[in-house]
Image (cartoon, rainbow, N blue to C red; front, side, top):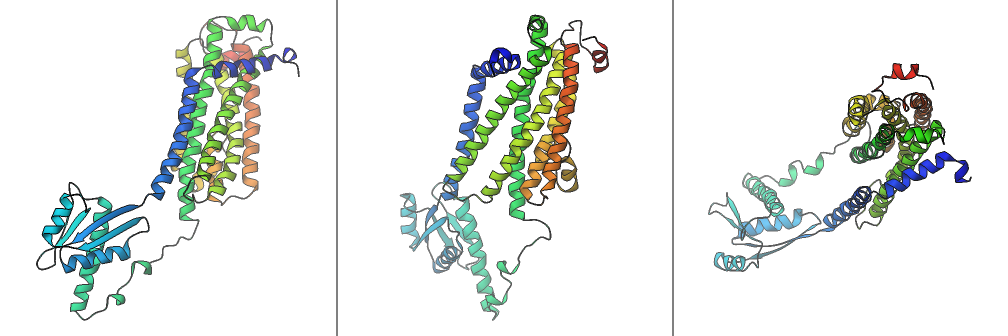
Length: 390
């Protein structure tokens, strides 16, 4: 289609071009992308980091404790132990050849872990647990009992009747990410629609535009341009984040599920943002000053806060209900999909409700916009705007 025959396309491209020339927008996008990559990279580095400790024991009991530490240590901890005299141990610690010295009291009831200028918390925790285990074995031996007769930590297995705890944790984290992305886009691309409308009313530019282009097409161009920008930024964030996760040196659980649900989130994001874009445009047409917009945008801000709240706290039946409420469903349904306990018809129904609401809101917003955008005599209410002549 020729751009000269599609005024809405000219407006949409102008919105995109204006935003892409905004240095603040470009910088914030790049910084966010770097933050995403950096977060995944740091997680990978920390996940593969191995702690190495060199500890000397000054007596037999302390050495026994260190041997227990070696048995109980996690895979990401390496421990080298030795048996030294107190004098030699202090000399090597002073030369920073040792991480710490472990010594027991004369009655072997107390232990001291000495570092050069500090004691690593991870090492301290491992030694403390090993110390308890060794002392317990000694007391049992004195009583003529075997430590194997006591319950082991592995004897207690946790289970749950409904759901998967690891998957639920993943859903909580990704739910917050999805909610925040929607919340950020709603303000970053939605609010400028309203501000642009107000600016054109104040400068009376809209009167010039109205003589060359239908107001319906002017509105459509503004909404479509910002929807394109929001979708492009969202796809960039998700693509870079998922790519970084896939090439990360550590294996991230449920990554395949997150990738599938991210596709659903993009679709729900499109519907929810399109609906919000219509609302922002209508609010901008009702206002004549930025102050008017701040007063009238309270309900929209409340809806966006609800999206964030759902990403953080919503569970159970409340989350199920929220997943069918337009705008809120943009985050709620993807969160439910992450849990894996959703029938295939549920996201389809929720999306149908969202798109139907989007269509109705856009039609209503178009009626408000055409009636109110040419009015410059002060802020309007919805009732007053509907009474105006087109």
